[in-house]
Length: 487
Image 1 (spheres, one colour):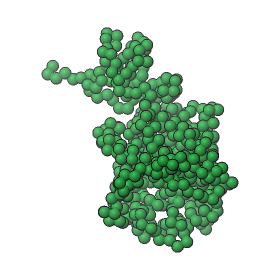
Image 2 (cartoon, helix red, strand yellow):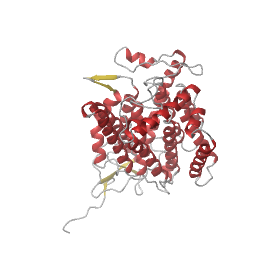
Image 3 (cartoon, helix red, strand yellow):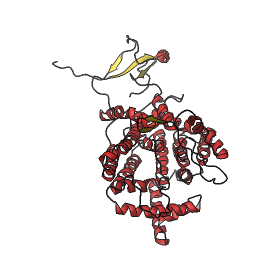
Image 4 (cartoon, one colour):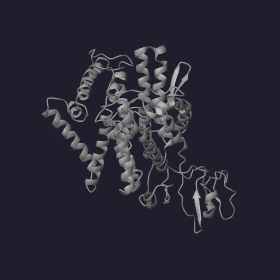
């Protein structure tokens, strides 16, 4: 990737061969369509959600692209995700035997590694990252009217429509909360819809308009809040609350040095203080105060207590997908993603899953970005990711929501390879493709004998293609120096 700039003293712009002007987010659009269309394909004995079917088609091409170095250097987070997927596969084989574990192992690897690779491979620049956030936001806005209808009728129109023609997501009914029916829209459960809408809030605020709050940016954030609230879910409201607290803290302490380390220290202090002062654990205290229904908060506490007992009873490989030990009157579902990872795949599996997220967060937190644009992009991404991680202690996600969750992890890895220039104010001013122009910083250096750019007259930019006309005297291909052999 090269800079877009005027060459020499003439009116020419340098454009990288094969570089799309706006990042071409076509594949991202296709991925989101497959995530959100509630259609289940029957292939032999397999029932494949569209997202699974797409990942099966994309899995090996994406893996080859990563292995060949086309997506930048290999990072520790890559190995952490692969290790988490392989350990969970081994745990399933130990729990169920090889023949019975083939199908769940396949699903687990495809959804974990494949979902991660979608973000890792397709999002490799500020432009494609902004496209990812924008497409996610547009998807939320498209689904919101149907969610509002469902809060009043209790019937999901989209699932009803597809159910008339194909196998679709099962419609579930829950008791109303706050006078509203809970909207599942296109997901198997309302909480999945709520998490999908709530988590991107930080990115919507800091990426789509990174300079200052405007009426449009305020409306965007308000739309995300309304959409997420239609799920009437504790997890969604927790994600929104945490992100808004981070945004408020960032605004109030913007002149304070090392303010995020101070926030981390304050959180640790509060956690320890509650642990010492209360006769309950901090988890029990947080859950009891942060749930909409006190009955469900008590149930979550019981699930956590009995779930931990199951973890200690099977600490290495977990239970797999076997039923867990609990009182007969306690429901089988586990409303805690991280706890369920430990129950199913043992403590090593849990550490690998959560460790991959923590590792990326730490690495990004210490990246020396300089431009306002990159600082804002990183901030929005980390706020969304951290808010989501905390909320998953009170909810579980699966199927397309889990694929999207892993895609969120992969969507931030490009920042580890990106370096901005302290003097590059064009990149700080505006992202490419938003009508305000701007330079792009480079990923790495050009290899020897690699065609770097083609200079074309500014007047001809509108008719530029991947195969520009043969350059003449006014516009010559620019190549990196090639060492002459034998001379």
